[in-house]
Length: 493
Image 1 (cartoon, rainbow, N blue to C red):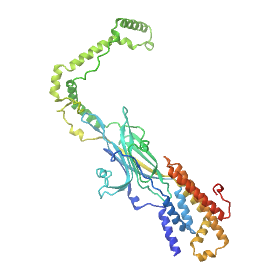
Image 2 (image 1 turned 45 degrees about the vertical axis):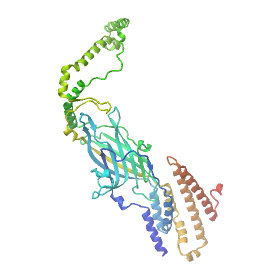
Image 3 (image 1 turned 90 degrees about the horizontal axis):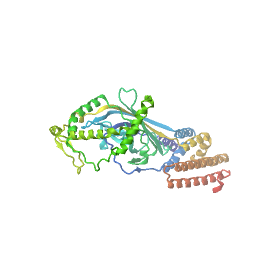
Image 4 (image 1 turned 180 degrees about the horizontal axis):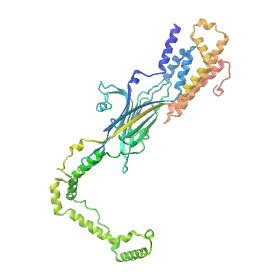
């Protein structure tokens, strides 16, 4: 019966060290641009789960496994859990970048980049409604990773940024009970216009130390800090330029008519008197400018002197011309022409509406088209840092195989056999107790280090870790005494 229990426990450990499920095999990574992000800005939710209880169950599952040759298997599994590993998936999609507005402006058609890794089944309806309306995400049943990043143009520049607005992480890929409680994610994207020699832009969004069941929204600093560096807008395609120029030609007469029919906003103040209207100032300015002109006659072109104040005679002439053009722009013949072109609707400040021509035609062909086809290539990386405790424990088990096996056999075999054990077996069991106690101290130290490295620091976790370390040291002192050895921590004895 005991052998059956040991065999069953071995199967439990094998399953515990590799927790991949059938759902993992169905998971897919997809990327797409949507007109708007599915989520609305809300307060950040960051749910963290404690795995101390799970590690406690692990000890119960590991103990029967460490009998004879099974010690090697357990040691190798622990060593594997101690190695850093990166899980990489890729995805791609394609769409158009620009549209042309009714005012002949080039507008960005894509607004939100959405990345999802989850379970898809296109024979079923999508669980979230927004996924049902997207060709790329249709059939989404559950998401264990989701990022939404808004495209935000940089004012005054021909660049934009991708600013994350939402992050959700459920379960990790390829996790085990020895894995650290957090992962690092990197979403690297590349944007390419087909036929181009190189991508017009690339960027990455990095999310560090993410725990399971995390949901970040809105203005969380972890989202803002993952914003990409500036990315250049792609050059508009020839068909976009053609559509824009065609629409500009269509709306030009209406815009000109609007300018004629709209009375200019009166200025709150008149123009300040010209400094050069003062006879003394204009005389001295003329004297200086004549002197400069005389000197320049004897200098080469590269050494001549220029002073902007010598253009003062043009100021009055230029102002007179501008006044005449403004008057001519709104004279009766031009107003008659504008009324024939435009059915004028004046501005309404109360409704914040601008003046317009109600008869301006709508370009249906422009409204239904998008331009500048481009592809988005995604590489999503999930990195699991190795467990230092698991690596240490695996090496210790490998080097102490005989002692650990003998000690566990003494505990698991029938009592009648234990009574026949020699004093040497008892001594080995005591040494095994020392080894396990020392490893528990190492485990508690690693737990305290992890708690201290949390950002932001959680004082409750730090206090619990310190208490566990103290208890582990007390237990180590007791184990050393039972083995007839000096205590390693006399300061707490």
